[in-house]
Length: 144
Image (cartoon, rainbow, N blue to C red):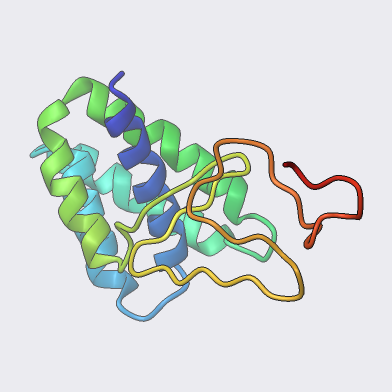
């Protein structure tokens, strides 16, 4: 599966779970159910039931597990219907999501970034080589 679609499924799942506990969930839940049902009323009803069960079981500490389950569901949706990516992006935007994502030790920002260093620290958008916080260099270590 295309990495962009995997990222979309992950972002949408995280936003979906986050939206479950917020105002406006009812409208979003219906939109998600329509997308998941793909025109089949029975599938849409099953999606509504699943969304309601998951929203009802949402508790502190369960968000990550629930988001992982929804990531798998949304990846399956996108595998079966790559055309669902557009409507899924629209839903993601409606949840207030759609920002950037990062994994591992990466950092992502969706808007302007201001980078500052203080107290002898190092700050950079990208560091491609060795870095040291020692300044000025200790005596005898200066390069000629």
